[in-house]
Amino acid sequence: MLSAYRCNAGLLAATEFPGPAEELSTLVWIDLLNPKAEEDRAVEEAIGISIPSQDEMQEIELSARLYNENGAEFLTMTALANLDSDEAVKTPITFILKGSVLVTVRWLEPARPLTAYRIVRCLRKSGPQPTGAGPPEFVGAGA
Image (cartoon, rainbow, N blue to C red; front, side, top):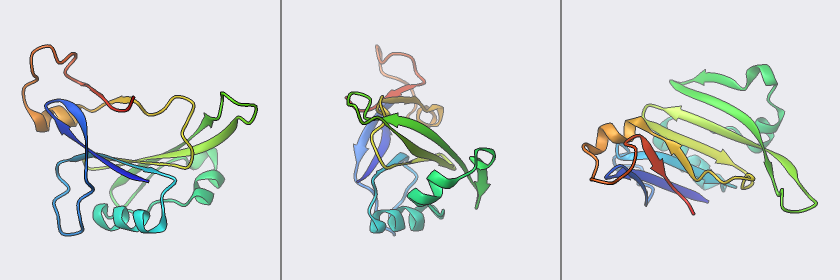
């Protein structure tokens, strides 16, 4: 599943992923959860990166989990999923930062979903915060 988010008044807002000819400058986060091949290709073409496959993410050596490729920073980590069952598993998650866009690649929903994270860049794009919006650098998503 391909989800895209932009910054709106200091908050993370779901949006449509732009087509190949559309502007990406308003996007701050692209989340790929169990992505289909065409979703991978769309993000790769739009951002100019190569998204690692699930096998590549699982097989990466600990010493190689942080690297730079084509102007993007990649970090792969292992998270836990299915903790509320007897079938808990380890699952890789890759974070890719290219310019001001964060791309996450996941194959399972981790134990604590990616419900919030800090995006200072989002604030620079959105300008002043509305009164009572909370700490200016905090951007929340999800349930």
